[in-house]
Length: 229
Image (tube, rainbow, N blue to C red; front, side, top):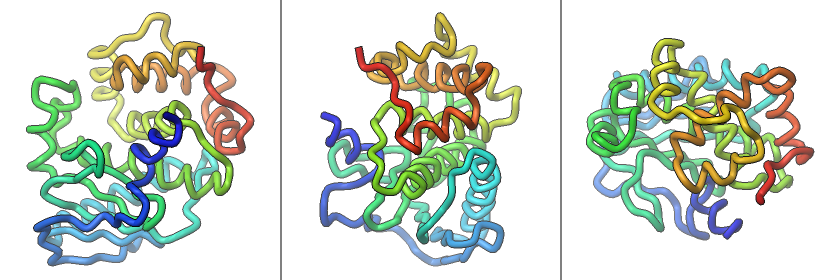
């Protein structure tokens, strides 16, 4: 199960590159403010939007010690595809260094009526890009250290939430409240039960005194893992 989850969140099946089916790759942009990241999108405006999200991600993660050590390509596609689950919002492949994000027009139909993030509209694309780049930077920073599924998603959700304007973050927290908030002991259970409740709990836990970037660093160095009971 642990191996499968790593494939689900960070990689695709062995030997399978993320090659978007039917994607129009008309613009390739080396991100000037996010060195080492290339955006591949159907039009210049979307490529620039992707680079802006990448630059924001780097700025958010640097204080927590998450660093990029290898090139990353972000492909904006009509529909991101997971090798096991099919259509998805976004996915990162650690083996190829490629990241797919569903284009903004395709995101809302996947969320409508099922996820509070549908209220984010255009901000959702940026938040998803930051989320997947957090997976990428976590994998690259950790190197050979194995990071578990709950810990991977904790970091990715923290930076997704951090990327939102405060008023929208509070709206996401209100839509999926957790009790007690910021409980480390129930993180793994909440991930299995409700991904958005897990995200709310991740943010509350990150905010808790003594945690923050220190907790992120403990995870990527292999010093901390959430209880699995």
